[in-house]
Length: 277
Image 1 (cartoon, helix red, strand yellow):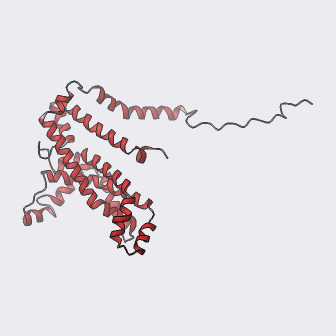
Image 2 (image 1 turned 30 degrees about the vertical axis):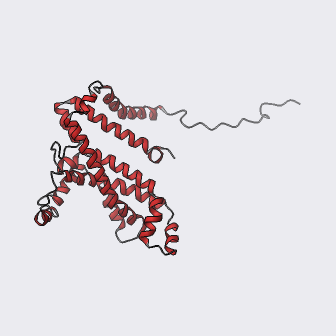
Image 3 (image 1 turned 90 degrees about the horizontal axis):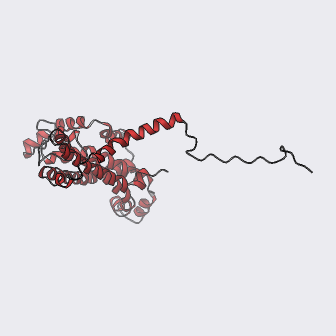
């Protein structure tokens, strides 16, 4: 008995593997966008004065800016942890009128131009500001154009990163553990400290690293609220801006440091932020 071609079962079509047969209309713009992002970074690495890099990074001006940036960014991150973790818990675990508005205000610095944030800080904490005037009259404390002003400016722009990260981790954590601790007689704060905080520790650490990196790279709010005084308020981004006009080699050296820090942050958070789901 002979079989015809119509009698033979048709082979099932294999599902097309992802990435195969990408339309040129999508591939070309994608490659252009990738090149747009990578070429400037490659140019920074290629044009770097590698031979003079140790000398550039050990110069007094660069070292002062690097030291000040590390101290201010670390202090700003510590302040963000002190106020940001409770704020994230408030947004994630409690229901109160206007919570959506509060969340929107917390995230506002993410989209607000940093220079506008610096102006707002001046109007609030400046010598003639709403709060700054009282600080000056009652305690003799002046915040603008000081190292403390740098810390406050960096905290203002970095705090939302921590709050968003911790709030997302809190929403993913099971609240039944806190409820079980409460049934055993623990207060709400004790349950948070002994049960919730260990559970959300990875999210807190990730948010702290993001806040630290954002504080380290802050420019607009810092120069507006704290100025650009070497040794006192001149952080690395401000030093890059100033050196670009007088000493391009030093500007490139500082830029490489900031680039290395950014790459290190992304590498450390790759499982949380850059891995595809």
